Length: 63
Length: 201
Image (cartoon, rainbow over all chains, first blue to last red; front, side, top):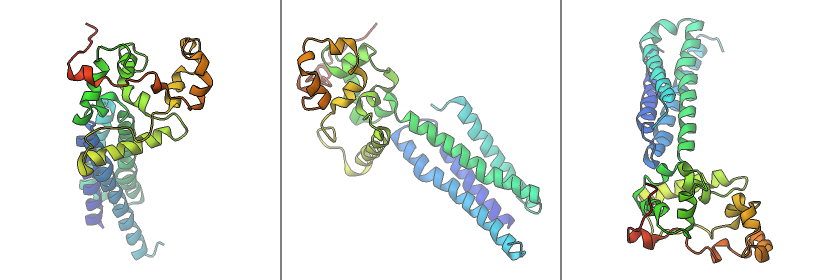
């Protein structure tokens, strides 16, 4: 599970880096980068984390 | 440029995500630790992303954002055209609209979904810029509506009492006579091409 959580952290971190870099100078291009790349990366990180926790709880019979 | 608070928040968010990356092993075994991971890896990045995008959407209404595409730079220059009759120049130079959002103030519809439509049209512009190609002649998607002018001028004394306006007020309000049928020059490109520009100082 640690591995999956770390993967989720990497995705969320990459998304935040992309948000920061893109948003330092707002232009149509950086806006699209922010909306199409950064936000989905952050969402993917969140989904990966929740999936890892859910699977772990299922394996332990908690749900 | 982003406001300092947002930059600091994004950097702090990144630092927290990095800390949780290293501390994941120790935190995952405890309920409180999982809550910390949930907040740090899901809630916080999503909140920062939403804040950043919200700032980006508001920034996309700014004049500098519109003029950051080279296709629009002649239109931007027309704000300085030395022509008191040209609508864009008159509004900009006399500060009739906020200079920071001058394009957006005149080119967005003021109906219920005016903002949404303007942003969707912005996406069409980006598509044209990067993929489909910009047409040789830049034109509006639809005839300029009187309602955009009347949003500000409708109850303005100078407009209502204007000698030329009084006889056609109902037609202007109904949109059957276009404001542009008399105010013909919106952007004076001839002055731009001749570099005949006005500067305050």
